[in-house]
Each structure stands twice: as C-alpha cells, then as structure tokens.
Image (cartoon, rainbow, N blue to C red; front, side, top):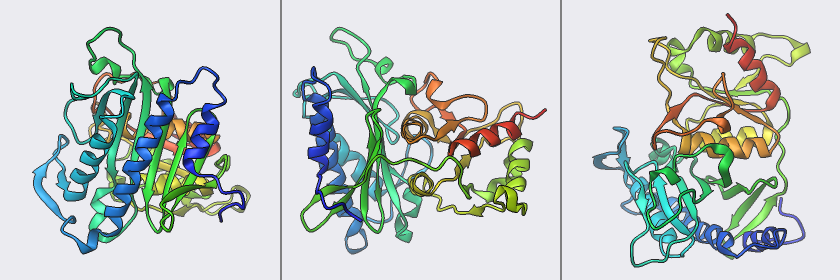
Length: 337
C-alpha cells in the first residue's frame, strides 16, 4: 500500500543526490533516463498479447538461446534511451556479444551501464513475470579510448544496481549503496511512486527456489541441503516451501520481500568442469549488491559474489542468494568434505 506521502522516483533520486554535496547531477540524469526506458518497456509488455511482439525472431543470441521479439525491443529501447544523455561512456548487454560504444555524435559521460534487458523471457508467451536488471559503474580507464576494461569489474565497484519487474504491477527496485527502495508504477499518472521504503530481507526464510528438474546435475552438497529443507522439524521451521517461477527477477523479488533462498548451482555432471548458468555481470553481481544492501547474502557456495573479478563479458557463476542464515547454512553443506 502506498504511503500518504507521495514520493516519485524522480523526487527520491534528487533527495538522494542532495546527500552528496559534490554531486553533478549526471548520475541523477542516468537513473531518470532508465526510468523512461522502463516505462516504455512496461507499456509494450502490458499490451504484448495485442500486437505482433510476442514469439521469436528466428535468431539466436550470443548464448545460443532463441531470441524473443520482446527481448530485441527491450534491448534496443534501453540502448536508444541511454546513449544520448551524455551520462555514459559505454554499455554492455546480455544480448550483445561485445561492448556497446556510445555513438560518436553523442557526448560521453563517466558512467558504465551493464544490463539484462529482459530476464525470464522464456515466460513471455505464458504471461508470467519478467524483468530488466541493471548495474552502474564509474568509468575506470582514462584518456579518449574506452575499452572492455571499463566493464570487467568487481561487484564491489558498483555505484548502483536495480531491476524492473513487469508483473501484475510494474515495480522498480534499486540501491545506490544507501539501502534498497522499491517504486510501483501508477499507470494513471505515469509515475513510479515509492511503495517499499528501506527494504530489509528477513534473516531467515521458509522458501527455497531452485529448478528441481536439474537435480541430477547438482553436487552432493546441494543435494543434501535440499533434502534437509524438505525434512519435517518444527524447531527449525521445516519443511521449507518450494516456490520457483523460472524468472530470476520474479523469484528474487519474492524472496527479497518474504525471505528465503534462491539457488542456481553449477551443472556438476562433470565434477572437473562444473558449468554455471547465470551471468556474473548482468545478473549475479547487481542482485548481490541489492541483497547485501537489504541485509542478505550472495555466494557461489565458496566465495562472495561481489568479490569476484570479471574476466569475460559473459562470464557465468553459480548463484546462491537470499536470507543470510539460509545462505550460510547452504555453504556449510556445500563445503562438507
């Protein structure tokens, strides 16, 4: 329920800017451009069943996955919305193999935008929740040349991260390192209004989110942990409830509000070469920044996700993320010898 004090996302961003006397307004402008892109994508998602925007293009993306028409639209809309504002020096998208330079005709800024334009796109035709994930860094290099080095970063270097979830309502959740805030789009006035102030995830949840269809690919620690969650024990509030949508943003958002743990461990059928699925820069790092700001935890099972130095644009990592006590317990199972 919205609070009696109406706070738009623009007002909130400006108020946050005032906490930093040396702010130039560039970062505020960047976030404002992102909200415009979010509103436009939300409009298309909401009318997708009425226009020729559902279905596939017949092409594959860099990961070999079939590209949905709405994927392409969201990717193009974000690029076009962000390239001209003078706030960015470079972008990188999950849908693009290489970095996305800012066209020469536009001024270059001091920030880097990394994004997944439409997470959960396999759910589009089923009218399930999908979302956009974004991450912002300050430029790292100096001089006129802007390179991939500006995108290959540790998650601890992020200056902002967030996501937009397109569901029964459209919400934008973001952090700049000063807590996590959620805004719900009021379509009657076309504004994102503050609906979730200073979000804090419960230290322990009762929900686990994992694709159990992959159970035969899990490592032994993960198998034992999931078996543990299914056991009945009133003292430890088990069994947990399984909730899995198959859209990372949707599963993450629910657990952020209610508490719980989301797991996407590596495919361990070849223990010598485990294969992760989720992308470090576009999914794992931004959500890790958000969850830690909300009091939770994000891990690969062995290390803190925010401490991982990216070495490739499309690098993949296992993701265990959610309530702190749940993630810590998972690590114990995962690291048992």
